Image 1: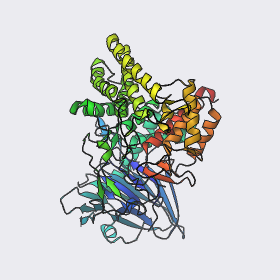
Image 2: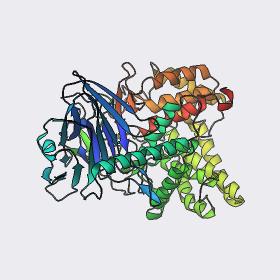
Image 3: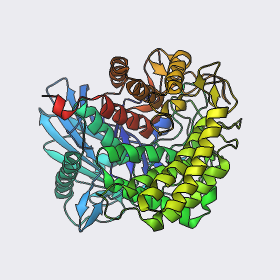
Image 4: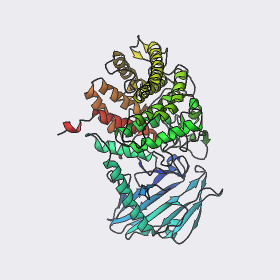
Amino acid sequence: MKTPSLDLALIGNGTIGALVDPLGDIVWGCFPRFDGDPLFCSLLGGAGHFAVELVGAVRHEQEYLANTAILVTRAFDGAGGAIEVIDFAPRFRQFGRMFCPMMLVRRVHRLAGHPRVRIRIRATSGYGQATRGITWGSNHVRFVTDDGGLSVRLTTDVPVTAVLEQSAFLLEDTLTLLLGPDETTQEGVAAIGARFQGETSAYWHDWVRSLAIPFEWQDAVIRAAISLQLNVYEDTGAIIAAMTTSVPEVAGSERNWDYRFCWLRDASFVISALNQLGVTQTMERYLAYILNLVAEGDAASLQPLYGVTGTRDVTERIVGTLPGYRGMGPVRAGNAAALQAQHDVYGAAILAATHAFYDHRLVRRGDVELFRRLEPLGAAAAARFDQPDAGLWELRGAMRVHTFSSVMCWAGCDRLARIAAHLGLSDREAHWRALADRIRDTICRRSWNAALGSFTAAMDGDTLDASLLRLHDLGFLAADDPRFAGTVHAIGRELKRGEFIFRYVEADDFGPPKNAFIACTFWYINALFSLGERDEARTLFEHVLACRNRHGLLAEHIDPATHELWGNFVQTYSMVGLISAAIRLSKRWDEAF
C-alpha cells in the first residue's frame, strides 16, 4: 500500500475533477460532479482507484503539457520498455456551448521497447462502502450499484478480459480508455480519444493565451489560474473551495472538513483574482449564481456556503466507510458551517458583483436593476456588523464580533455607495455612505487596541487574526495609515512561525493550531508590499513558491517546519493568494527589457 500524500496532479473540466498520484493512479474522483459520491477514494483509505501500470517499472516522470490541464505520466522499466499515459477530462467549445462531459480520458502510448502493462480499476459506491458490480460487452465494462444509482462505463480498445482479470499484456502501440456516462460511443474509442485530446489542448492554449499575466513567475500564475478554473462548476457558475473532503489540516487533529461546496467568501476572492487576469466569463457566471441564491431565498439570511447547484442543504455527516487520509478520520460529507452566522458573506456577495458595474468587457454590465437587487444584502450587512458570528475561520465553539466580518460588512455598504455614485443615484449614495461611515467609525473605536498598536481579531479584544492583513486590500485603511503598519508588524511578531503566518495562535475548538493556513502568508506578503517592504515580500514569496508540489499546486495548510502540505487540495484560497502576490510583486512588462 502506498502512503497517501498531496504530491498530486489535478485534472478536470468543470463537471468532474480527479487527482492523480505520481505513479499515474487516479486516487480521488467524484461522479457525476464535484460533490458526488467518490468513484475513486483510495486517497481517503478506500478501495477505489484507477491505475495504468507498467510491469517492472523502476522510474516515473510526470508533468502537465504546457499551458493545459492535460497530464502526462511516463514510466520506464529495467529492460528498456517505456510508456506514456495521457490523462485529461474533455473541455472545449462545440455547437456554440462548452462541452465538458462527465468523462475522464486515458491514452496509453508505447514509447520504447516491449512494455507490458496492467489496467487496475476498482470503482466504489456509497463513499467506499461497496465495490461496484460489473457487467461487460465486447469493448466496454459497466460499473453499477445495487441500489440503481449512477452507472458509469469504461469504453476501451484494451482487451476486456485484461481489464476484468487485471492481467498484464504487451503494449504494441496506443490504447484508449474512456470512463464516463453509461452510453454507447458513436465513434471508435481511439478516434474519440485523439480528437478530444486535440480539442481540449487547443481550448486550454487559447484560454491561457487570453490571460493578462505578470512578467515574472508566469508558469506559476498560469498553473494557478488553470487550477482555479477547474474548480468552477460549469453548469451553474459555482466555485468550490477544493476538490476533496476530510484531508486533515494537521495530523490526527480531526480538523477534517468537506470543501466541495461554494463558499461565497472564497468565491469572491477567486473572482477577483481571475478578473485581474482577464477571465471575465467566470465572473459573469458566478454573478448569475449569486443572484439566483438571492432571488430564491431571503437576501437577509445568506448562508456562508451552498451546494454547487445552489442548494442550501449541505447537511454534514460522518462517513464511517472510509478510514480517512493516512487513517486519520473522521471523513465528513457535507459541512455544518452552512448553518453558521458568518456576517462577512453579505459583503463578499456585493464585492463579487461590484466588478459588473465597472468592467466594460462584460456583455451585460451592472445597471440600476442589479443595484436594487444588491441593496438588501447591504441592509443585512448594516444590521449585523456589530453582532457576534463564527467568523471567517468558522469557529464552532465561540461567537464574537469578529473585526474581519465587520470590515466586510463595511465593504459591502462602501461599494454600494460607490456604485450608486457611478449610476448617478445621489440619494442612495448618501444613504450607503452614511451607513458605511457609521460602521467604519465603530470598528475604529472598538477594534483598535492602542496598547497593542494593532487592530484586534474581535471588537473589544486583545488577540490578533491574520485576516486583518486585508484591511488595506479591502480599502478600509490607506497603506500609509500608521494603524495599518502597526497591525501588519504586530501580526508579523505574534503570528509568524518560521516563514509562515498562522491565522491565529490561541486555542480553538480543537486546541492550538499547529500548521499554517497558506493564504495568510500571501496576505502578509501583499501587506509588506503595500508598506514598501518589497525585498522582504519577494523573499517570502519565493519561499512559498518553493513549497508547492511538483506540479505547482498548493493545499490549504503547510507544516512550517517540514513544509509538508496538509488540508484539502487543491485549495482555491492558496492559489488565489499566489496569483495576487505575483501580480503585485512582478516587474512590469515595460520594465523588463
